[in-house]
Image (tube, rainbow, N blue to C red):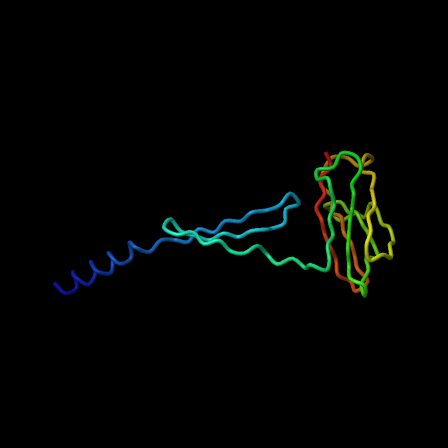
Length: 136
């Protein structure tokens, strides 16, 4: 009888435990910007991922049909030195040397075929910034 009572108690206590649901939100470039956890009874919002406020590297519009605008701001000691465009397979299509801590450049994407490309910015200290580009 004790065994039956104990097993019923264990089974009853497990029914109150639910699995935690984890969901993610992404921006247009595919970067994770929000992570939310919660169950059917409660929802907990997690703070957005921390972004480095002294550096930024953006490209727009995505998807691109004509010109792609690339903007960057880097710190004084490590300016942006190289911009590269690669195919998804890794083939280098474009490379330009730049030595500026802040700037903007327009790249003509009209000569590229439809598909996905990888835009990479490399700082003087070797830090890389990567943006996925979709050509329509």
